[in-house]
Length: 303
Image: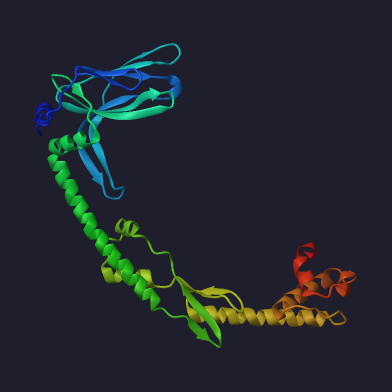
């Protein structure tokens, strides 16, 4: 790793004897003194940066360090004060929890040489990082290339799965239609970082992602099952049970007025009315209410 002083000199960057950091903190080539304020809740720290690492999953580059430096702390009775850190020459540091105001806390990157200290703008900082940690950035470039390759593979798998899903047809038996439903496809990023992405082949992935989770019948009744045939069979049983319930309700409704409404509304209302009749056969509303709408809208008061 090149020395920081050499890199700064090559880039034409001059160092200062001292730089102000935050509201009243300061950095020189020997020490970093950072302010503490109890009410701001800040706990400033300084760590030496030893490298960089990259997480493709988070698309984020982070600093590596040897841990936070020890410090001497001076605190007043009110909880305010400062922390002082000893620094070494020709090192890169990160200061965290730097107090700028009672509601604003930041972190800073600075460089220390035997001649002084400097804090760079983002472009200059990135340039010197590329030089300082060349092997780390080479590894990062490889990680990014690998992730791009995985992205292409994931896009192919998802596109193929969507095409396969389009080929799965509804099941129709005796006029009852059961439609396939599927799980939500993962996005590219989620697929790349799934546990099985490395272990499974493309075809295996496509088959698994294109299988329906279940089949659903929505009319004339609702039913749901693993296969279309099972969903239709369940719907048929539900229809038969409903028709039998309606028949029993109609038998108990002899002598009561006919109800107006759609066939489905009347079928439901007859069952509600039959339940009221079984619980309170003298209820006057049994002969007064002649619309399915009334029984359906007022069903809760009869429960």
